[in-house]
Amino acid sequence: MSSITFKGTPAHTVGTLPDVGETAKEFNLTGQDLSEVTLATFGSKRKILNIFPSVDTGVCAASVRAFHKAASQLLNTVVLNISVDLPFATKRFCAAEGIDNVESFSTFRSTFADDYGVRLIDSPLKGLCSRAVIVLDESNKVLYTQQVAEITTEPDYASALKTLS
Image 1 (tube, rainbow, N blue to C red):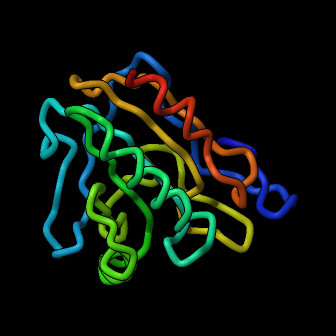
Image 2 (cartoon, rainbow, N blue to C red; image 1 turned 90 degrees about the vertical axis):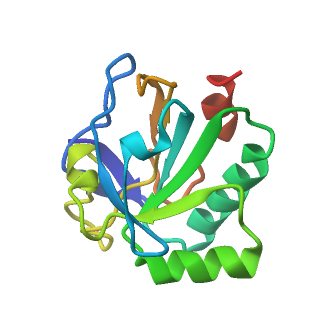
């Protein structure tokens, strides 16, 4: 269990992020077109998993925008935005913002949040994903993780992106 905060109040996740060096667990997520995708869908690309509570909050939207901007400079890398948001919400947001360098997925029909240790088990955000970043290499080995200590703050983009340079 990770101990983090939401607006300074303690919050906890169901588990912890995968360890650097281990192979990421397979997952099933739902795309904006309601199709199912797995980790294997992205083949031998490097992956940035941008995990957050909801794209309808300012900090979550900022993380999507930041990784969208960075993605245009990354070779053989895909950025996956992952939240409990329904695919319709992320599709609406991405269309309105002109976000097309990243892909957005929902955990609403999967065990991803439990498998990756990011489901919040208490706080007003109970049931949503915590804010976290996981970077995977071409073989799905974990290169970097960050469980953001305060949910209302943005992740450390520079450190995450540095692992891919």
